[in-house]
Image (cartoon, rainbow, N blue to C red; front, top):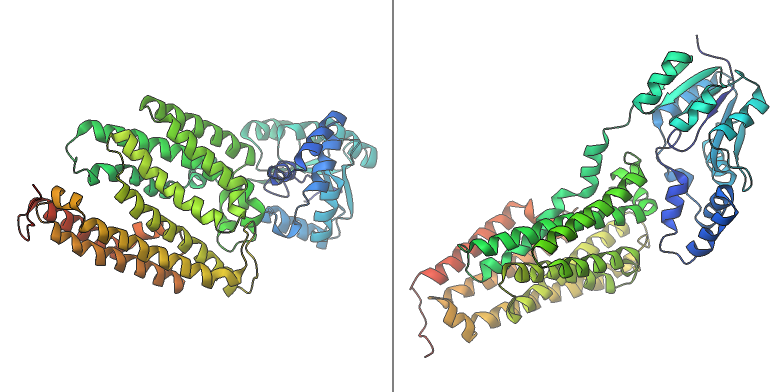
Length: 480
C-alpha cells in the first residue's frame, strides 16, 4: 500500500537529470557577469546560488526531467496526495519549475540566506511535517540525513552504496534506476566519429609520396592521437557551454549533457584529462606547440568566435587546416604553399556548408535566428554563394598546381593529374547539392566518410595520383 504521507521531492539529480546550479554557472562562463556572481561566494553558498539563478535563468520547459518519476508524481497528484518541491536550489529556480509543471502544492528552497542542503533541508522538513511525517525522494549521499527523518523513501538513480544503506534501515516506497551507464555516454559525448577529421594529419605523407617512411607514420600517429584527445576535450567543453541551445535543437537535444544522461562535472573533469593527455602525447613528438595553438583556437571558437558571423566559418576552416599543418610538422613533410592554398579554400567551403545546412534547417522550421550564432536564417542564401565560390576557388588552385613546374618534375605523367580537378570539383558540387536538399545532418567531413560516392571519388583520385606518379604514359618532357 502506498504511503499517504506528504511527498517531498528533491530537484537536482532527482526530478531533473542535471544540477541546475552547475548548469547556470556554465551558462555564465562566457558572460562578464560571472565575476560579480563569483564574488557572492564570499557571502555564502546560498547567496551564490541566488546570484547564479538571477544572472542565468533556466528555461523549465527545456530541462531533462526524469519522466519515470514525473509520471509517478502525476499519479500521486491525481490521487490527492500533497506534493512538495524541496530543493537546495535557489527559490527562483524552484518556483520557475514548479510553475511550469503545475504539480506541487508547496515549494521549500534555498533563499539567498539559508542553503537547504542535507541536514539543513532535513531540519526544514521536520519543522514543517514532523519526524517521520513525510516521504522524501532523493538521489545522493547527502540525502541520507533527510531520509533518516522521513517516514518513507523514494530512491532515484542513487549510487549502489546509498541504496544498500537505505534498504537495510528505511521503508522504501519506490526505487527508480533508469540512468544509462556513464562510460558509454561519456564516449558518445567525446564524439569518436569526429576523429575521422584528424586523418588529415596523414595527408602530408601521401602528398610527399613517402608511404614507406616509418618515422613519418609514427609522427603522424602521434599527431593523430593528440588531435583526437584534444578535439574530444573541446567537444566536451563546447557541449557544456551549449546545453541550453542544444536542448532547443531538434537533433542536438539528444546529446548526453542536454538530455541529462551525463553529469556536467564528469564532463568537465574528462575535458581536462583529455586535454592533458593530448598535450603530453604531442610533447613526445615535439609538436605540443601545435596542439596548444589548436586548443586555443578551439576554446576561442567555443567561448566567443562561434557567435561572430563569418569569423566562425573562417575559424572552422582554420581548424581543419591546422590538422594538415600539424601532420606536416609531425611527419617531417611540411606543407607546400600549393597544398596550403588548395586546402584553405576547400576547408572554408566545407565550413560554410556546415553553417548553411544549419541555417536552412532553422529557416525550414520557421525560426529566424540560430541560438548562440550571429546569423539570421535568411543569411543562408548569401552564405551559400560564399561557400560555392570557395569550392571553385580551390579547384582553380588545384588546376594551377597541375600545370606548375613542380608537378612536372614530381610525376612521370603529370597530365593525368588533370583528371583530379573535375573529380574534386564534382565532389564539392555534390556536397553542396546534398546540403541544399537537406540530406546532410552531420559535419561535412563526417558525412563524406559515410557516403559511398565520396569514397568512390576518393579512390578514383588516389588511383589517378598513383598512375601519374608511376606510369610513363602521357609523360611530359622534363625541364632540364
